[in-house]
Amino acid sequence: MTPLEQFLHRAEGLLARVEAILPPPAAREPDFKRAFAFRWRRRPTGGGNWLQPVTHASTISFDDLQHVDAQKRLIEQNTRQFVARRPANNVLLTGARGTGKSSLIKACLNGFADQGLRLIEVDKADLADLPDIVDLVAARPERFVIFCDDLSFEEGEAGYKALKVALDGSVATQSDNVLIYATSNRRHLMPEKMSDNTGYKHGDDGELHPGEAVEEKISLSERFGVWLSFYPFRQEDYLAIVAHWLSSFGCTPEQIEAARGEALQWALGRGSRSGRVAWQFAKDYAGKLDQP
Image (cartoon, rainbow, N blue to C red; front, side):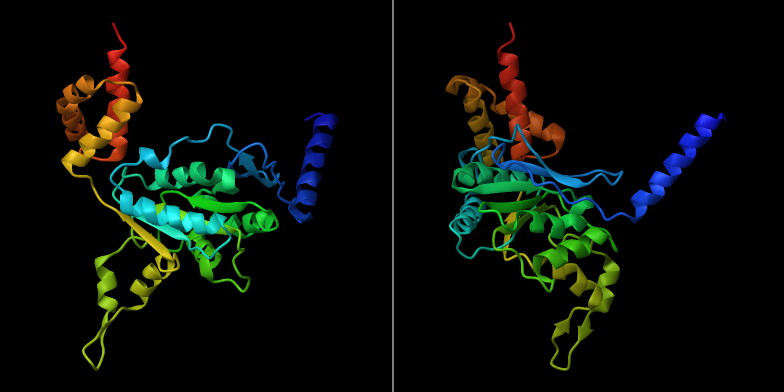
């Protein structure tokens, strides 16, 4: 190793030690005029965290979501209360995959963005940063929904406790301009095991009391004020969703009717009659119609 290489190596080591004792850089405030949706980004090298504007956000609307009318009505009302600066709840959307849980949250943004609503998407791995995110936007006039998609925790994960504290467990009150909307395929966000049932105890009055393992699993989900459950679609509901998307792609009523058989075969091949499968089929079918 040459003297210059030795010097550079020692300088890099010195810089690394200095960086280790310096306070972390403050999160940069984004330009909220550039976009309505943002992603929380973390630099693994310690260069600071920030909100990255999403320049091409989803354009899905409430009208695009079919056969989830009850769920749509509840989340729309809760979001309307929120942007009007009235009391509103955090929302947990759980149930069958592909039934519109994430799309419904995106539709809320498109429905209320002109009233000051903003969406911040946070990965499960970054949930420990929730206090920093809330502090970053607490003084802003906009209303923020923190979007946590497809949550699923294993035993002992740090993100589980971070979300629990952010919802309702900190000495500091939750900022009144921030709500958390989360989706999951699990009602209680954690795996449920047969061994959990051994913790149940019988009271003197014959009442069954859950053990600590079960209490821990339900303690997070019960901190959401609104629960929305989603279920697999019936065949006719699935076909109606297919028809909606085919119509949006410019197909005629005759073409939509002719597509019913292929739509059912498509769903059978994927083992699911969901809104996502219907949308995927419609794109495939409508795209092929344009071919010579």
